[in-house]
Length: 248
Image 1 (cartoon, rainbow, N blue to C red):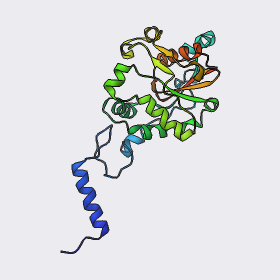
Image 2 (tube, rainbow, N blue to C red):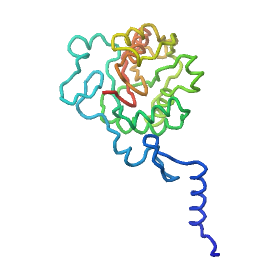
Image 3 (cartoon, rainbow, N blue to C red):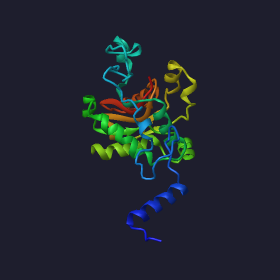
Image 4 (tube, rainbow, N blue to C red):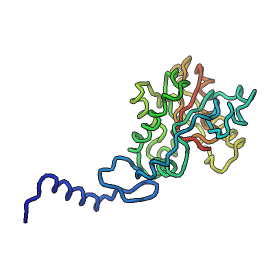
C-alpha cells in the first residue's frame, strides 16, 4: 500500500469528520463540503436579497413601485414615531428565515458573526446610520432570556460593534413586560402590545445621544417603536434602528 501524503491524510480526516459531523445547508438541507464556510449552500446564498434602492424613507419597507414613504409613514404620520428611521440589510425571505430561526431557537449563537457581516456590508449604503453614537440591542424579558440562553439581538449588536468600532450598551434598556408573541397581532394591536413594555434604567447613559437600536427582524416596527419611546423619555436625542432583515 502506498503511503498517504499530507493531502491524502487531510482528505481522509475531512471525510471522517463529515460523516461524524455532517454539514448541511440551513435552508435546503443540501449536503455541504466539510470546510464550506457559509451556513447556506451556494444556490441558497444566491437567493438572499439585499434591500433594494426603493424603500420607505422612514420605516425601510421595500417599495417595489417607488415612492418616498409607505402608507403608514406618509405625511403627518411620520411625526408620531419616536423611532425616526429603520434600515435593514436583507429581505426576510425563506433562506434568511431559516437562518434566523436556527439562530434564535436552535441554539446557534455562533451564527451572529456570519449574520453581522451582512449588516456590516449593507451599512455604507445607508448614510443615515453614520450619526449613530451608541448601539443598543432590543432586550429580551428575563424569563425568555433564561429559556433561550442568550439574546440574539445582543449578539448581533456586539458583533456589529466590533466591526464598526462603535460602543454598545446591553444594560440600560430592559424589558419590563413579557409580552405575548407579536405574530398573532395586526399592526395596531402590535403597537398597543408594546405600550410600557420597555424601560430605560440608566438615563445618564443615553441622554443627549443618537441611539441605534439593533434587532433581527423588522415587521411593523412596533417593538422598535416601544424601545424608542422609552429611550426618548429617558433623554436620548434621537433613536434610529438597524435590523438584519425586513419583512415585505
